[in-house]
Amino acid sequence: MENLTYNSPVLQLEALVVSEQNLYPTFIFFFIIYVLIMVSNIGIMLLITMERSLHEPMYLLFCSLPFNDVFGNSVVVPRVMVDMIRPASEHYISYIDCVTQAFGYHLHICASHTILMVGLTIRLSRCRTFIANPFCDNASLFKLSCENTYINNIYGLVYATAVLSISMGCIALTYSRIAVVCLTSKNKSLNSKALKTCSTHLAVYLIMWLSGFFMTMLHRFTGVADYRKGAALLLHIGPGILNPLIYALQCTEIRRVLLKILHSKKLMPR
Image (tube, rainbow, N blue to C red; front, side):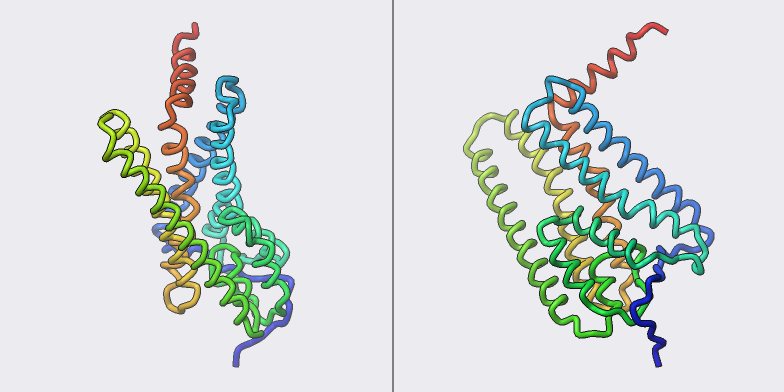
């Protein structure tokens, strides 16, 4: 019979399972990725903040993307890295910290339903203490309950399906209109720029869409934990790395300011 502990204040996390020989290379990989995400995204925010010529609505909107990437990755990645090098007997987290991390995680992904979704989960009593995930999210939290989680499952699936369907519909409509403009326009420079920007944007969107879809679906099945963990981590680090390249460095004005700063540093006397 399963050993049940009701409403325990301490939970156990299942860290990212890595063999001993691959432990440090994997840790170094995540460390480098995290540093790149922090440096590139914080650098873009500082560049836009400090450069007066970029104080326009379009460029200020760019700040929300790197801020969201910095926030989301800081909520998840450092904890995953620390647990990776800890022994399994030390993979513990308090319930309050776990709920806080889950709230931050879902706030990063989609803020509109975070409070309701997490609220539906914390109302449940808990009889388990093991989080079958390298970090806390809503689905992992409601799996701790021995109560009927039918409402949580239905809400999660309906909301995920609605968001993904609406999002895909908007993307399809937008790209179809862009395609029509490109086909009717004889401006090769404009068409090339549109194709370059849209293809890279679509690549990031597909990574986010597929990662989020698989993560949501795989939570409903057993025996696929490794695939679920991979999808969840890719949902964070993929866009965090690619967004600065796509949304900032492809922007002519931001690239011009960045090159001007780099050029001025080269000309400085030593």
